Length: 185
Length: 105
Image (cartoon, rainbow over all chains, first blue to last red; front, side, top):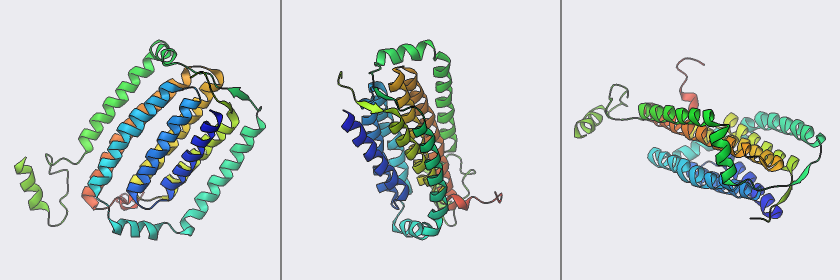
């Protein structure tokens, strides 16, 4: 299990790097899904089966479907890829990479200087999680539901719907077609 | 289920830190808002990994509860963020974040 844990971590790291550096949105998205699945595996090997299932079912399943839909709706072609290639020069990368490397070095030093604790991960069962969730964290659960409602309302309000043509400034030449589409609906 | 890995918590924390920094790098470097959102997802997951590592060390359920809350926050953020990206694309015909510079921010 230890080997599986570290292998999952390695896969997650490589996939995260690919997401950040890839130019094609769809490929980056697939790498992101792979990273989420690898992290789910890591969660499982760290004795958190409940979090692992949530990671796979909700994150890699539901949230990523949203991403896939949006990428497909935007239909970003090869032109976007060329634009990305133009944007992502070595000059753009240099300073952020340097800053991140410094931060990583400092934090690794801080973590390493703490006590070396090699622990055998214990399984925390879903039952314990549920008990903790609805006993100590009841208010957090309520607040989480509030956040979800806020996200739902926000997404519903912001998503470009043809019902509110005044919110969409018509892109040149498509005004008539948008109005027709609104009438069709 | 009983066979559980023996891990070194600092190593897992370091991995989660590296993941977080990769995500931060993406947020800083990329201009395409879709990639910025994806990098944000990486950062949130890195935080979740740190929580799970801590939960495994102390064998407490709190870490998993926190991961659940992170999940909720990420879901809400993705919903609002993606609809903002769609709105931006409909209005400016691009997903370039630097395009929204009307207020010279």
